[in-house]
Image (cartoon, rainbow, N blue to C red; front, top):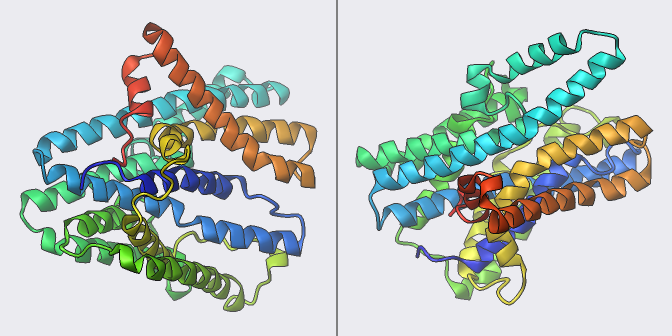
Length: 367
């Protein structure tokens, strides 16, 4: 089943809202009640990034089943890489401009400050593997590209039977070493292609290639499981973040991102979406998910950064009004930038590289 699935496209745009929520931290720092609300909201939102990986793996499987895996891998890598480069080109000038402004205010050498920051942006490991050289938010794209390569190797070696166990093994090591750090921390970054993206992308691939299919007759079971595991995910993170560490929400927000509960809620949600493929049909949501979700992801770091500078300049960070508008402003701002890019691509392709416009609008890396 390689055609579009409305339910997945619908959740794609909704998941992007949750991605923005994770990065804007609404109501954090406004007191115990506000911190508690932020914790629940942010814990709920944690399904979003794994969802995109699972969807990517699912469609990678459906496409490679009917086309040459090598050719399709090259197509995917070209697509993801071009979007990543566009994100870097959009975000870097904004960050460097701010660095220059801060240096000027501090009576420092502006060119030296900008140059030093620019050199940080070309650190090879962070730039080409972790995807965190310029903005940590863009890490998803390199992680997805490498995950495709890992899966491709299993396909070529005809060892896909071992794909999910191997990927799960790496993921568990990452969880136990960082997210469940009370058991002992490992001294490497694990929110990366090997320890994180590989597992969820492989999970989507295996769901697509298995003989089992979620039944429409059991869609309420999958929905109930999604809700149950969603609540479990919140409780699990609360237990590890506060109960076991003798902390309270008044003291801050629990930082670790993903847990075993994340896997459970992501799998149950994806099964529900496959069991209800027409979910969202007749609304604008599937079209928004297909056309703009990835564009919003790539653009929103720059929009977020500009809004943060505006907030700090006017000392708005501790006002309720700011926390009410920050997340919608970031999402809508990124959406408007995507609309402008789309309009430029439609009316004057020579003004923007046409390949970039096409990638952002049509060749979404999760399809």
